[in-house]
Length: 346
Image (cartoon, rainbow, N blue to C red):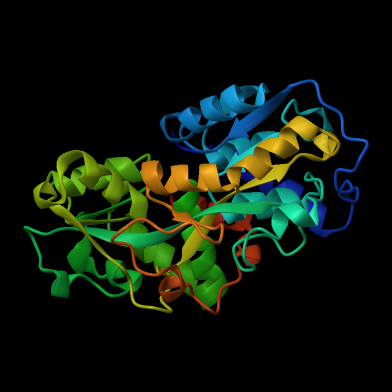
């Protein structure tokens, strides 16, 4: 599903409004006056297949009923901007830091208690306690091991601007993780360089997919030679079919490359739910040991809670972090969407 340009315009308008200071201040952190009705509404930009089992587990243990609306992270973010104070959502679970930052800039989140945000290391959560990181996900290149060796895989995403790659690689431009990567490219390399990269990639006729999973399947089937995805899709597929049966393999871009970023999934408490004890309990559950272990075991993502070990076979998280990138700077989602739209990718 492609994001209409009107959505991008909506996000851009809301972000400009936020940055101009014409919005209300964020609601204060939840206090002792919290209320509970044993129910709340969640907007989830994460796939139902990935997180619904965890939500079911939370409901069973807490007795709290969760009404979930699933959708694309970018589209749900735009919807929240449109709904404003009238949104029925109390919690937004997002696929990337950029969407969370855009909503934070628009003052749509309450300030979370320090005891919640302090559980996650600095660098993987917001700098102002308006949202908290839940899991880490590394951007990687998946490649067809029958078409090239590991040594032949480009060490940088800049290689995909070479005409030699025309029609041979895949991207998912409406996917929140891809948009966050392009935002990182803008932040790290500048607007002109990002414009040149997107223009060159678009001119190379990349194969367009809706999501990371579809890109991985196409590489694994030999339809394309390479694609840009998040790491955990490969590990989930390998767990199902066996690593020895995976034609698609992974390559991590060189450290410092714009393609070598560790983004986060994260959650924010909507401003209108600042005193909602049920919603806050769910956010705390997401960054608790049980949920963090679930993400390790079931989705192969990096845990952000100290004491929970990452899935076997993954590089150390600190080895992938780009020291020049602050995830808080991935909040200019509207500008990225406009750039992708300018070159016909969305």
